[in-house]
Image (cartoon, rainbow, N blue to C red):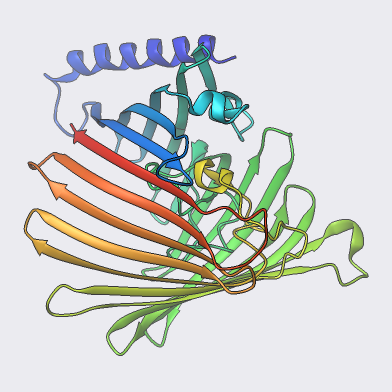
Length: 393
């Protein structure tokens, strides 16, 4: 349970605010500075296979509170809290949906369903809780934080600490890890990193990264151990071709206890994006997954789950992603994306419309339309429709 940790964190934040109010009269360089922001969202979801069939519906009120404490030029801390109130028959349509919302993949277990009823629940989760120390070329951070080693936009084989699902568009911040991270910057365009995390199963991930720039490209090399199960080596790059972004990454996982056999798994993604003078933006990406142990069938849980395994980013074999977006006017933007998996003949169509109502209020409509072009009896077309309003503060 999380009630006691939440109380401690909130008490800590209150004390920080008191300290801040006492510091206003001090020299601006020396005073403690607290940054506070967040948002409030309301998203309605409808899930159905046929317009005339039974629908699964959900309403999610999502409040985020971000606190950052700048103690000094070299010391900072942060607490970020998600408060989510979910209601609707989705809680009965998916039998363990409440457990999935409460699940915390981290060691600290900072998520709890404070209210858990048949058709509604309230979940409170802390997904950032860290302190960082910076000294010239060195930065050390401890706590729940996001360690982003990915280079491509949709699938990230290099993101071994906290992979995420592309379908979970409502979680812009993405998951974090309970980790220690050390970053050293030997030059303006290079960094050496070491990181270690512990998950909810008390399994450790240890890895290092070296990123450098040459020939106008950023390259990176990674290596380490994932969840005490696999050794991993990988690389990635980002640069430009024909004035468009060209990037990619690959990781090879091999079981620690089976080093002499051929059970290793390769995942690789390559992407390209280009922005025209008219502001038309196009993007494409290809994923190869050599994980033959993952399911050949798509599960709706891949849409609702924020946490993914870097070894199991999508279905086995090749997957193709493409997208186009265009600002129709200063307040209206439209986009259309597609994900196609040739082996299973599966297609996702993802249209989105964003409407800016003011400088801090946005209305959006998104569809995630799953279509099968095969004769398998257990393949069912599904429609996920979302309407969301978001206000930032």
